[in-house]
View 1 (cartoon, helix red, strand yellow):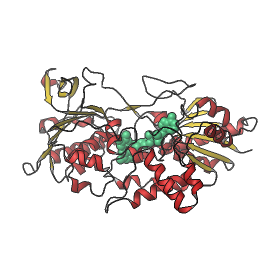
View 2 (cartoon, protein in one colour; view 1 turned 120 degrees about the vertical axis):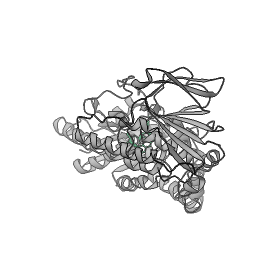
View 3 (tube, helix red, strand yellow; view 1 turned 60 degrees about the vertical axis):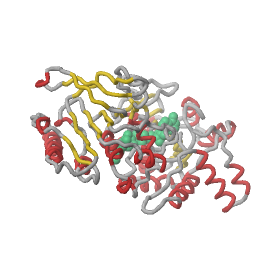
Length: 453
Ligand SMILES: Cc1cc2nc3c(=O)[nH]c(=O)nc-3n(C[C@H](O)[C@H](O)[C@H](O)COP(=O)(O)OP(=O)(O)OC[C@H]3O[C@@H](n4cnc5c(N)ncnc54)[C@H](O)[C@@H]3O)c2cc1C
């Protein structure tokens, strides 16, 4: 009897799980249910617009989506269009691959001032995510602070200081390109709570900072004189490598470029200050030499890149403190599994989600063998029935390929694509194609049935 699996979320973790299920369960039916009209999760909406080669991994996932037994249902938010408990009655197994899309708060006074954003919002804005395209971040300032010492912080800082010429081969939306170019930002401070030996940047991203056309790096060499005391030798090597790159950046050259990226360490955020809008940020110095004194940095923009959490879903436990669904190596509840950031929290690179998919597929296969899933579940037939009753305009993978082709066709060389950033724009593409390629019927079916997000 075929095993009906619903994967909720079409990011890397969802696709790696689908790929692994196709390997281990010959008779599987997989429905990938995604709240956005577009697949690939943070590959489209998180990975920086100037890192196009990283985004190429989506081609591999395309091959999975095109398998006969795999169906993609875009524009279907689970918890709104269909509930998790309904999915549990329709499918033998549900895989939560919903990621962790909500910013962790800084938890300090002033974080709600205008001009302060979490990186989910800010990165979503410059990546054309429909939820955040209208953010209109406050960029009219000469100085910005990015909180965090991971790659997301580095991405945000780099996108803020790169010149328009350096972004021409990116898929930065026009509105974001124009706003950043007009911003007047000259100084960006990347601030970490811990030492320079504790940064979580990857070497390649850090080295890239030394290649920026209009921006030089400012680092106090005294901050780099830190002992590396990691027990694990691999970790020690990575720390030493990062410190060596930071020393190279600190050495310059200096003085010839109009923008500066300041790396600051040992500073714990205390408060964000301002009237209605952010004017400065107050930090406590944590280096022993500073004996807990405070430092104020003036700024008109703060982006906090300090981590993410998932959102609760009806009918399953949620750990508010960890921001994920508590699980035993991915097992969340009978017939419910978690993978990727929904399982582990927000850490690792795209490939780190692959083992989660493999473990999950093996668990589903083992559970199916040990305890046949009982009377055949209706699977996608039941899903399609409720979505049609609720007049949800689902986006198929074929629809996505048309949207994708229109984005690529609309790009100005050498940009790889010109992203559509609203559901309405995407539906217009489908309506146009429907009129041209098939008949008026297709165009009629393309009428938006859910509110444009
Ligand atoms: C800003 C940023 C930049 C990054 N850059 C890189 C990089 O350069 N290289 C790299 O290797 N890694 C990078 N990463 C890490 C990488 O993106 C993650 O490891 C990976 O995307 C996590 O995969 P996931 O499938 O768990 O989550 P996601 O990619 O977030 O996918 C989750 C999907 O679930 C959907 N979803 C959420 N809720 C629902 C719901 N209720 N119903 C239906 N669908 C839902 C979401 O819309 C999304 O499409 C970056 C991460 C961030 C945040």
